[in-house]
Amino acid sequence: MSQAPTRADFDQYMVPNYAPQRAIPVRGEGSRLWDQEGREYIDFAGGIAVNGLGHCHPVLVEALTTQANKLWHLANVYTNEPALALARSLVERTFADKVYLCSSGGEANEAALKLARRWAHDHHGEHKHRIVSFSQSFHGRTFFTVSVGGQPKYSQGFGPVPGGIVHGQFNDLDSVRNLIDDDTCAVMVEPMQGEGGVIPADPAFLQGLRDLCDAFDALLIFDEVQTGAGRTGSLYAYQQYGVTPDILTSAKALGGGFPVGAMLTTDRVAPAMAIGTHGSTYGGNPLASAVALAAVGFIDTPEVLEGVKRRHDLFREHLETINRQHGVFKEIRGMGLLIGAEMAPEYEGRAKDILPLALEEGLMALIAGPNVLRMAPSLVIPEADIAEGMARLERAVARLVAGQ
Ligand SMILES: Cc1ncc(COP(=O)(O)O)c(C=O)c1O
Image 1 (cartoon, rainbow, N blue to C red):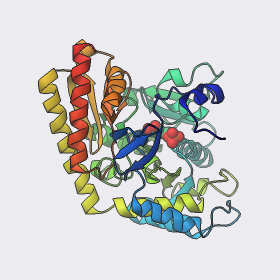
Image 2: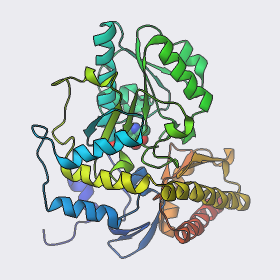
Image 3: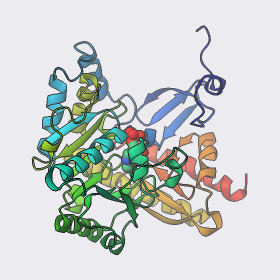
Image 4: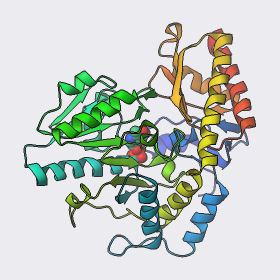
């Protein structure tokens, strides 16, 4: 190829399932990115909560390049040192006794759901297969995970969905009491709904789910794909809630931008995933595992995790200042560096209109549904970048208000 690819190549060569912005970033460093034209952006999007340490963090570059010069891939006919070290590190840092490695959040959740069904099948019989999840939840794009996810727009139009899945209301324990029974094998929940609008679970709700699962011998699955790997100010959000799941899934910031996923579980549950029940060619890939090992080790320190909480306060203060000036937000919420600003009634559904304006001002941000502006920046974003990014956001919001 003689010329640099352009945005027009997307429309010509790529399946049209995405609608990317016009600008094509070509380089990143920390919380800044530069596009083909050399325009600079501050990154509050973090690759949708993936770039936990920003772009090209030296610790991750070192881990990746060192491993790249040693061994790239084996598949699971052999095990490898980085995968074993990552599994041990995750076990030592969490409730888990056993780890299954894969390459994405959807895959980690697929494994969790299959494990739950298989465990219940083996211990109780065929009848115990029902899964309770929640409206507005998001668990990935495989057919099982879109069916368990609570957003029908992602599961409809593909033929019959897998059966035995019911949806309760998030933060409404009574809705779960009405659904759960002896046939329930698992309850799957995000401790803070991400795609569904950045909505933290009430502590009593998660504890109530734990109690209901115990009462019906169902497994509690926490999807921490978005909330995990330091995002909320603890390595995993469950550690702040003090409610321990039977299965936890992690991806996104676990690899800091390198595709990796993990399913964590206990010695009570893991044996149901016996030899041959499940697998993935790339699961435990040495490159992915080496990067994730470095990311987890760097993030799970008081310095980084306290820094996340401090930055949360800064984000909130800036957003409140913008809101005092322009009155566009109804509520600012979230935990750690997963922050949502819900639009005020006059701007209902217009969070998405902020994104192109912000981009023109040199800021990348996200939405969580049409009504919530979402931010998921690097966990170590410099305070100067927060201030500059917020100045750019203020200009974008001012333009929204002025109708430009
Ligand atoms: C809570 C949650 N679970 C699962 C997924 C799916 O992860 P992936 O896109 O890596 O398959 C996402 C992605 O946004 C997510 O936010």
